[in-house]
Image (tube, rainbow, N blue to C red; front, side, top):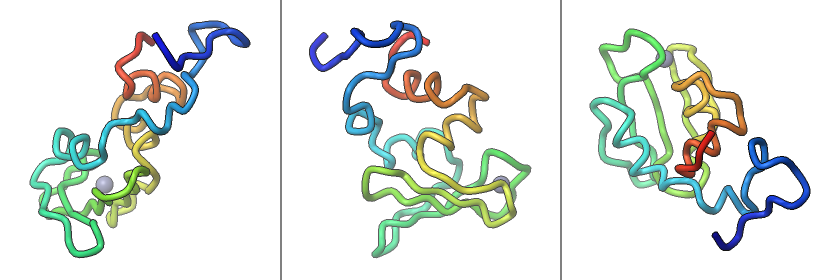
Length: 106
Ligand SMILES: [Zn+2]
């Protein structure tokens, strides 16, 4: 595959070059993982039910526009970007979460 850099580190822990550019689109990712996701407002932010606590009133804010996929739970589950969201959802460590998001083997 083009664009992969396996030379300097073992394959199981290496991240491809420019991995951040290859992350899923936040709008598509959050649509899959966040229940009752709203349409984004003028600033690209949407709300939905937080998957990290028993959320009945949407208290998760996610940014659907832009590459980082910023999120914040207003009930106190935390905040971060697409990768930390995926980490928290799956329990994977940082590199494993990125590889999972890219569709690569763990
Ligand atoms: Zn929460």
